[in-house]
Amino acid sequence: MRPSPIKVACATLVLTILGVASWREAGIWRDEVSLFGALSERFPYYPPVHSALGVALLDRGRARQAVGPLREALAVAASSVEAHYNLGWR
Image (cartoon, rainbow, N blue to C red; front, side):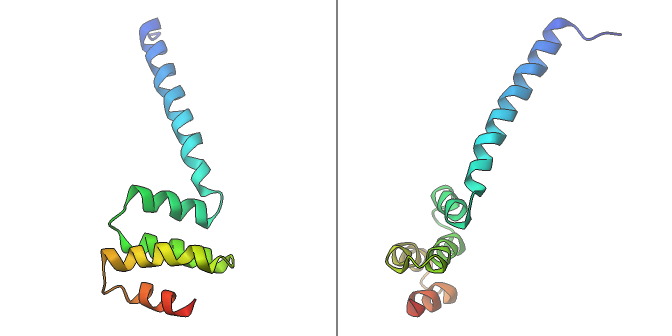
């Protein structure tokens, strides 16, 4: 039994959309700064992501840029031990 042309067209359209979305999403995995930067925009109230972005920036020698995400982590959760430590480490 062969699928109808409409089903084939719909499946092709869905697979194309999913393929394009996957390709675009894979772009955030270039490096840690790209990944955690994108995640901090998507999840603005999740302190570990902001802290991880700050650490990634520190690892790249960009201490001045790391201050913002680390302070953002503390603004969301003042009890974030990791953010306190990393902000003091810079």
